[in-house]
Image 1: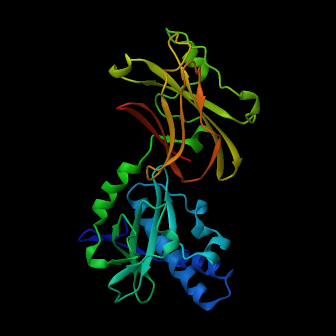
Image 2: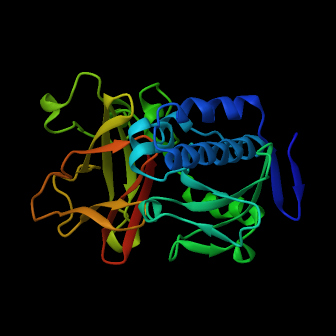
Image 3: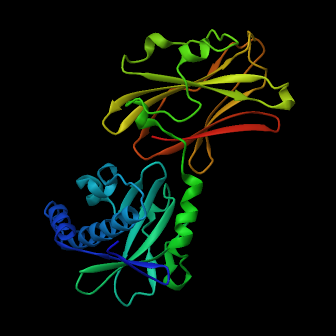
Length: 307
């Protein structure tokens, strides 16, 4: 590791490649203040990417707003996607500053904000710590939590199902093809309803969910289908089916789509004699997180995904 760590801080070098990237992004800007903003933001993102690489964490910089000319122009953004975890904001802090400034446009859709102090010569950058929330947009540097805490903090966002990997035939444990489930000791006559409307490139997988003692150990099958809409966008379909010889789902069974912060984006509930229920088809962009929750009464089963 070429970085240094003192009192749970981390110093990253800002070499020629870091400045070359900053120069490249700035060439697309004309306003002097925006040029300076983009330059410093790019260096901050570079430093955080270097740190995460040293910690063994993969990132997806090209899928971020901070790598997009239009978003750079419209916003003050320094985001970086941690693969399978979520998006962090990398805020540059100048020498002598006592606070980290977080612009309003990045107060949401972030799992944390890292303060990156740039030295006067812009040859190194020191990660001072992080805050999990933007608050009012001004965070005292002496109130930051340590980088060690950051590594613990992001574990809660790590997901089991990176959906973009489905397109390359990589799946997490428990997700099977419909054909594999049909060949189980209790044959399941599963098929994705409205299949004719799915693109040919669609990848479909299913997972058995046990609803527990409250519902007599009944299981249901969660079916998820993904298809590429563009390089950074997936089309996602979700259905819930009965299994084990049951013709219908239990009534009042809830199927919900939750945001990364737990907000309900969609919700559907089974009625008597429903043989399946489904969410409206939705789209997700690279790095976005969401969850699918199945529940009834006190029983809740949640599957977390990242696009």
